[in-house]
Structures are given as structure tokens and as C-alpha cells.
Image (cartoon, rainbow, N blue to C red; front, side, top):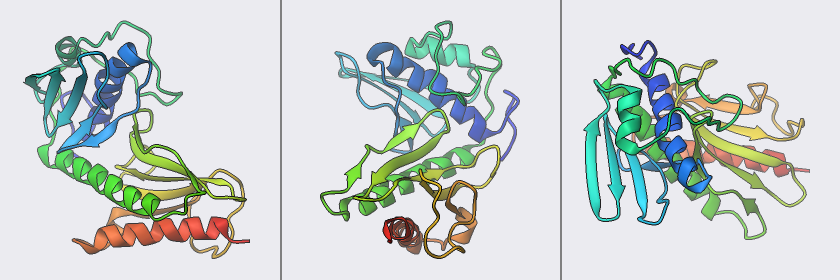
Amino acid sequence: MSESTYGTTTREALHTIAAHILARKRFGVSGRFGLRAGPGGIATPSFGDAPETIRLVGLGLIREVGGTCTRMPVDGSTLRELAAFTDADLDEPFSCGPDTPPLGPVDVAFRLAKQTAAEIADWFALAWRVLDDVLTSLPGDVEVATIQLWPEHFDAATTVTQPGSDAVNLGFSPGDASESEPYLYVGPWGGGRPGDPGFWNVPFGAMRRRSELPDGVDRAESCRRFLETGLGLVASP
């Protein structure tokens, strides 16, 4: 992924914006910071009385308050300018978990790779489509958490708890400090790794890199099978 003037990768810069613009602003109004995949990017759920939604779309930032929409470019703007546009308070202490990204240089302009931003948006859109498909096929007695795009780790994930089994995280990451490539994962909360030992290939459970998945329409089906296989193994006696 290409470097930005901000001094980090496009993925890391988008992570910072998601946490310190979108999540920070939503939290300041509602006390909640979970995000969602949105059309062409990342979005807050609607919050506040107006209501308000903030969306990161491609290399642009969109703010919708009631029936009014305002826009500004992210590429070439600083974090301070984006915060002023959304009325996010960068001086107010904010944390979405112990791995919340640092603010970094708030007065240095972002220079981001458009293709990378589009690939991350596509990965999160795929995540919602696959996770929704998996969750709607589960029996009614399975407990399921709302799918969130968590600003701490910048991944889209849910938690599934099957009767008599450990809870399991299912998620999609666009990459992180330990894995540069986008991947999806199954992460059981307990220490057990039942069934096929070849499936459990990382310390936290199992993961598949994007490069290990087929292209095109078969990718979603391959992701779904992987997640369902993990759920099935955890639920096995």
C-alpha cells in the first residue's frame, strides 16, 4: 500500500480517520462508537436528534444532517480540518479500546491511494454480505451480536454463541500490524480448537488471506463456507 504524506499507509490513515473522525464524533453525541460499511466506504449509523450520518466514501467525507448534505475531500486535508468539518473534538479524551490508533500529526495533509481505499471499501462490503448470509442461516436459538465495524482494530465482525459452545468471533480485516493482506477469520473465545487441526492455522483461531480466495462471484461463497466450517467445528462434541 502506498505511503501518504501523513507518514503511514492508506489503510492506517483510513483507520485513524474512522476512529478519530467518525467514531469519535458519534461517541461524543451518543456514547457509542461502532461503525458500519456504507456505500463505497465506511459510515456511522444515524445518531443524534437531526439525525446525523458521517460517511467516508472513496477519498471524500460526507456529512448528512437532517436533509442537508455537505462534502469535503479527505485527500489533501488534515485531521484537524476533517474534525472541524464534522465538529469532532480532537482535544477531548477518546478511546475505543486499548489499541485505539494514535491521533498522529493532526496538521499534516493526507495523501491517499484511491485504489487502496476502494479495495478496503470492497472488502468491508463483502464482509457485510457474507456475515449477513451466515447469520440469517443460523437457527433461532443461536445468539448473535450486531455486526460492527470496530474502530479499534478496523475490522468488521460479529460474535456467535451456539448452545453449549464457546462464543466465536467471525470477522473481516483489511490487514493489520501482523498481516498486511486483507483476511477473514474465525476466533473462538475458548482455548479449544476441535476437529481438523489443519483448519486452525493462527494462535487466535483460523484465518484466510484474500489471495487464498477465488476471484469474482465465487469469493463470497468461499468466505461463507470457511466461516460456517469454523462454526461447525466449534459446535462439534
